[in-house]
Image 1 (cartoon, rainbow over the protein chains, first blue to last red):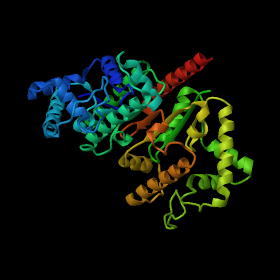
Image 2 (tube, chains in turn red, green):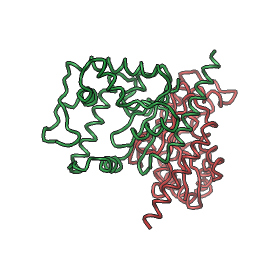
Image 3 (cartoon, chains in turn cyan, green):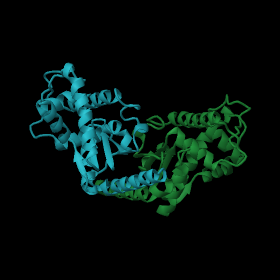
Image 4 (cartoon, rainbow over the protein chains, first blue to last red):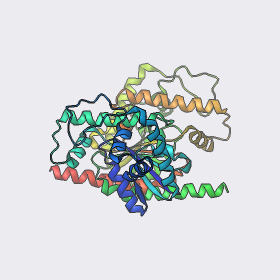
Length: 212
Length: 212
């Protein structure tokens, strides 16, 4: 089974990298599908699940911070069920075959599949620029608000990750390759990363075979 | 100017990666040459310089720890001169043209050349195995001694680096690509890393041209 997991700092282009990498390798890409699957299983609204899972640690966010990133309050009571359900869904999807999964600590959840674990990061200027370029036209965030948002989202990711992972979120020891996308066009590096992935899986498969 | 700097954890195969990468790209590789150049300039023994520069922070090392890694005591009085001389030598060598430089915080010293900065790391089991495989036949280190040595050398590297660098040694923000060599044959990933380097330099050069 060839599984690639992509963890990323908000605004680093990790999602784009994951999507393009899946296309380049001709394998499935899972992102929103995970939420939809959970939604089906627990019979709750997908958007609500998404917000709760990805922002469950952000509870003191100012109400005046209105934008495309508007936050729905977290409901800690339902968190643990959703987290457990997410775990189950990720395992089930992985069982179906080769794929790229972005976020959701999939690298930890699927550790026993020996996935190729990527971490994508960038400096703040670069992340700000990426967020601006993909923001909806009606978004009005000051520079300070944007930086704050980026940090808050990453903080929530880190906290969720650190509850289940042996290494902290973003700690390079937890990943096979850490890619700094500062001044990098994601599209251009896809062939190289795809080649690295091919090499990685070949090596792992050879090792498996050697073990019998 | 195309400059690649390789920082690495002891035993991660970073030196091998640097050497092979230079060969693959057909550019010069600097390592021992830096020491020889300093030696010529300051008229001091090369081995003494090497030991002083790379181990200057290890002063309480047990005398009984005898092996191929036997330590020469650090002489702090002469350190600052040697560090300054090393800085000068690295700048001078870089001026000569495209190269790969391993260690010595060259990525920081040459920051204005916009080098491709690699960090090579691995888990402890993998580093131990690499050290064993390349150790002289007469080396007799217990497992505990070996781990201690690896940690001590990296600690010295970190301390030397952190005195001049904006990010801590090994902090991924200070590098463009961090490569985990656990279960990896260095040789096999060279073509991919070389390709990444080619892409990196093309991008940087395009940006330079765009700026005029």
